[in-house]
Amino acid sequence: MRTLNTVIRNHHRLRSVGMIVLLIALSLAGMGHGPSRAAIRSTAKSVIVTPTCDSLESFINQCSAQSGKALTEEQASQLINAATELRTELGCQ
Image (tube, rainbow, N blue to C red; front, side, top):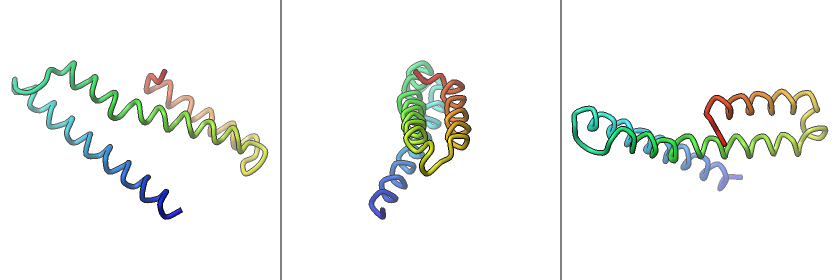
């Protein structure tokens, strides 16, 4: 369990660092330096949105697997619906 917590903590740190780098790149692009805004948007999607979509999909799968077990069917349904709405808002595939 300790290893899993470390992996999760490091994953969030890496995503935070990625977001900071993207913000710096956006600032540079606004000043006429660095990559184009389109390139930054594409990178942002691969660094932030795609991993989030993947995590939400895994969460939905776990909720489905635990429906009627660790979660009641109603709890699982509510969690799945909330995660599905987030995936829709993010434009997940």
